Image (cartoon, rainbow, N blue to C red; front, side, top):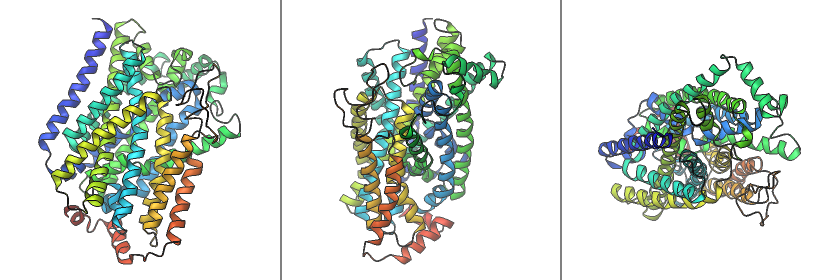
Length: 537
């Protein structure tokens, strides 16, 4: 059988499976609790798998292994940052957020503050972070399908991005949180199995000797021993050292502020299950990031990295083809198709979670609580969620098309920086600082959001970055250069600014502190008492 036909069939099988799951889930759903939180019916293990499925995105699978293949040790730092971030999420927010909210991040903030300004700020931030994250997944989808179908035309890549956009809107509008969660669980199992298979085949090439693998990667990379030491990507000068520090802060603090991860804590029945699901997720994600180490260094050892795309996003699929027997062989074609199909399922699951989170925030926070003062019916709210999903999908498609030459892990790191700057200060202050008030919340969210997005706009990501070969590596055309901010990741400036503005807004406001509401929130967050009643209302 022709390898292209085989590839396409496997691909379509994965899409058909996810569509079938979505239809099945839509028959099990009724009302907003089912649509937004899966009826809170998932066990800790199931939710752990789904969190893993949500978190192990195209960025992890394609972007990190590509970054390791190109930069060695410096690429692996992404894996470490993404994993360590979970300890912050577990210790600071998982259980307390589950106990004190309903469907969205804004529910927890609005509990002791003026509803409208806080909900508006939180919903705006949720949508912006989700769109940044969506960009990365769509770019991955375009690169993958172009590789699989053997076409390199820009039109095909753009078309793929549009198709992924349409599919993700379908998952959300039909399946809701139940459908999305089951797609993520299936995808997590597929991804772990597929990655484990490639890791075993790579290690078998080196007689399961990790030292031989690393040595071969170093010699084949052309950088020699420097490939296994810090400094190939970051550390050449002061700017790159600061950029690395900025990236590290954004990765470690970003997870605890990612809205599509936070919303997952609401899908379990108890706070014990919330804790358990994070522990399962940490286990799964930890193993997966060890896999990326083998995938990245395996790609450096077995592939000609100079022939990879500039961002290295296709290192894992190309490696699968190489260990299966190489280009043109049946084994290579089967493995390439399998890994690409898994990566595509990864992208579909993650984008569905992102769109659900942002569209739910638009409907629940802005439409119901700000515009309708909480009087909208469940059916009206779900209808607005579906419309918002379509609009957000369209915006993501239009932004992803010009972003195709950026590394996916790098794009996700920007989303983490925005989340850590805008969402994390408000969540932490709200749970741990009695005086925190409405002005503090809105200043920290808008201040962190505007500074993070603004600095990215005036950074080399948007304009003025050129490769040694003269290729334009920025979003805007090479003729435009507005980059006065030297760092590629804004976290170093925007995250402390978000915390500072939260403090400043609070101490300069004369708004009386709702002491009784804070005490109730504290008791509820720490014990879970009263959380169930809040869910019913």
